[in-house]
Length: 640
Image (tube, rainbow, N blue to C red; front, side):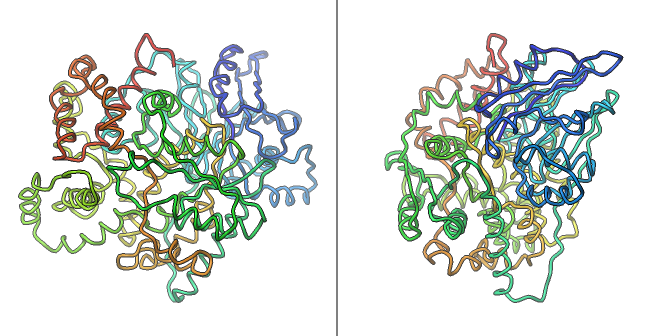
């Protein structure tokens, strides 16, 4: 992977070098800039690039790269998994290539087909192409948003970059967009195309943009579809899923540098490593775990035990780390790398496992994505279990919720905390319509709770602002689809690119590694859209068709084990290691000085969490991360 940046409408060599420098962690293997002057009335522009060498590690793959007598110039971050097939087709048409990298193929595809070439790409990417003849910039991002691309316009200049911190080198002191703040608190992240920075935007997944004559035109070039196919047996579907998944995994193993995989000992990562093992003799895998002390508040299955057994059975070159991170020292660093506050502690685990894997690997395959396309999350099951509630009058459901609200508590640490937490979450959406109930399961504040948290001034400013408006827009697009596919579509447009793929990119790049997601390969995602919903969620079994597909490939104990979420022992950290930092960052004085929240409401969250009457760990974590983010990026006396 790499870091890209640039601008159109300004001639400034030191600026493009500064923007490129701040992305150094994304590409420690090389750097390059290209300036386009304003002579003879031309529009000035600049491209910057930091290189993490994966394919053709020679100087021939350096960027920015030119093509067609230097008419087209590209800065590109990503991998094209079908570039060899694309190259063969172009060579059959008489084109010749000077390198063995996918960058040159991508440029040639654009020169030959224009933006229509996006329909032919299978890969993960974010890139910008400057057309010197037409004096315009073309940008695009992959279908599901694995790789990021941000942009902003200021004083007639368009700026773009892989990370927001590079844009900060070119723009005035940043400020917070308050509507995005409500979204961040509700979800722990901000839906695209907005960001928490006022005036800075993200190109959404599956979109491209053209900047010409001072105007930016953005369009969606790809959208997920659900054209369900009937008639085939369960066994036939399982075979199609297995063949397509294994083909995708093998396709994404192309690399000129060391490549391995994460291994949690679960279904998704197990499917990846088992397929890799069938392709090459040596497969290097990494697992991370936490100490018994850190897991005292988290009752989860033993990933390390499952991973050890699977690694022995598959004869992997397996490595594991039992981690006790210095979280107080590590957290500010990761806040800087995340750019925007993302309050999912899984980001920390991702950074730690990528850092451990960097000892031997540059490219790491992940099992991420199967939950979004095959219905693997507990909230998908919760949506199914609560559908009968719609048959009951809403006033009755509301009466049940309000009567039980407050009676259910977390209690003391132990095995009952998980079931209690799930019951409390289930209760929160009981009185809502089906889609609103699902959104409640995907969020951390009901509207009235969020209102109480905000300061009086901010509460008045936001009024009846709906943080779910993007989710509702996507749900409306699929109003005629079966209910489960409708939920999966919303997840694929919001939760997947804006949370899971976002922190995976930032944290892997912080460790200068590339993470690939073969279970989100274009062909597998397309196939998943054809699979009948009843094969994704079969009664209480999530990802049913993928589990059936892996029978005979993985041990049954791995396929049918309880799902363990990828995260970190946040509740233990909040109670112990992070407690002094929480007391400092969320003190009444600090909160009052910020002017965003009601100090008493914040103290109430902390107090109830410590007493065990509520599970506010993620709410507290979100506020803590937000305060550290403001100190890093917003405060006037801070340099990003």
